[in-house]
Each structure stands twice: as C-alpha cells, then as structure tokens.
Image (cartoon, rainbow, N blue to C red; front, side, top):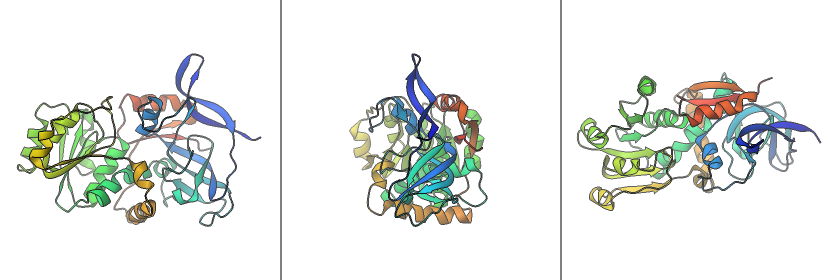
Length: 334
C-alpha cells in the first residue's frame, strides 16, 4: 500500500478541526484519472459540511476539497481525453466521493479541463467554483439581459468576485454588498457599479435609489437567515432572488409573502450540485466558460492568500473568520 497525506475534518486528541492524516493512495478506475495535486482551493461548502448545515450529510472524518489542480499521474481504463503528464484543473465533481485536499486525488475525466496556459497553480486551482456557481442562474435559469441590475451579496469571497465578473461579462449592472469597508475598493475594481454595506438599515431604499426605482432584477444571495426579508424589499417587479448559502449562520428564513406577491417576484433555492446532475449541464457550462477564460474576458481568480499544506487548519480559520478577499488556496507544490 502506498500512503499519502490528506486533509480531513476530524476529532483528534479531543479537538475537532481540520488536520492532516495518512490514507491509502487511490488507484483510478474506469473513466478516472489520478492527479498529483499542486494546489486546492477552499470553499464555503467545506465549512457547511463540517457544521452539519449542508444538505449532503457526512460523518467524521470528513474529506474536503471540491476543486484543485495538478499533474496526471495515472489513468484508468476508457480514459480518452488525458494522458500521464498532462496539467489539469478540477471542476467540482458531483458523481462520487472525489476530494482534492490531498497529495493525490481521483477525478472522473468529465470533470477535468486543461490547466489554463500561463496561470499559476493557485489560479488554476481556484477558478471553477467561482464561475461555475453563478453560470447556471445567470445564463440558464434566470438569464441576465444587458442592462439588468443584478445584486450580489457577500461579494468579496471567491465565488462572490467570480459572480461579479460573470454578471459584468453578460452585460449586467452590478450592486455588490460587503460587511467590510476595506473590501469596497476590490469590488469596484472587479466592475461593481454600486457597493453597499450589508448591515445598513436602509439597504432596500438605497438599492431603489441607485436603480432609479427599478430594484434588482436578480439577487444572488449567500447570506440567508434574517437578510432574505430585507433583500426581498429590493427586488424589481417580476424579479427573482436565489439563495445558495447561509453565511449569516442560519439555514432558516422568514419573509412576508406579500413582499413577493406585491412584486410578482420569486424566491429560488439554488444548488450547483443539483444543476450539474442534469444531462448535458456540465458540458454546456464548461463550453461557455472555457472560451471566456482563454480570451481573458473572464480573468483568473483573485488570490487572497496561499498556505502550505501543513497549515491547512490556519487556511480554514481565515475562511471561518470571513477575512478573505478572493480565493484561499493551499499549495502542495514540491
């Protein structure tokens, strides 16, 4: 048995947290590729899993890592798109127990793409969640039209900044929210026309003022909890809010139904995993995003901080504290 180090969330010496443990290095099966990981990126979904607040339930020890990059180390039967030595990036894989937070990882070849030319390992590791997550609501579910006002909450995380970029790529006018004043400049740099403080008491009124009374045609919310009712007041006539996170720490929401009725508005519970399981969805998203990356219309992700593998706990502590602007990445480059 060949061993490797992997990152898990587990109880060790009376402390439950992220740590490194030894595991067997896996061999690829049919349609699978084994990757020697160069870097993996952190995502809020990792934290939801460890807190028992994800609809996917997991028992300790919990493997983590939805995206990463590296070099193909071995290939299984029927693999046709990649060979040993190819540099690849991982799209978040929903078809099985695939995790990137380790020295080696398996991936179904459908969920691999070439490592973008000229990009660093940190950039190649952190690109897919940030653009894939907003792709489905922005392009397929509630297509953005040029000139639409789109509101994005908690916009300074990796996926938030990617959502701002994708909305701008589609021609939207973006309202971004943040709880940290020192992050406002980064949101303007990414293209947001308006940046508002999440906590301001007149948030909805400010949105209406900035949009000349129209409101937001689409609201991308990762806060949930008590914020949903306040955000709903900022919806445009026949607008839609989709909720796909719970950064406020509360998976429940309460809002007066008349807020929606008055606007003929909609509230949608969104999951990237659900969308990727639909036939052809992965291929459509991949074929939309790849050309935009190649042309530079969608830029590499903004990297907040890179941690060595031995400091994986510190990396997650930074994410838990909400300190990041962009992607937090863990490096395994040798």
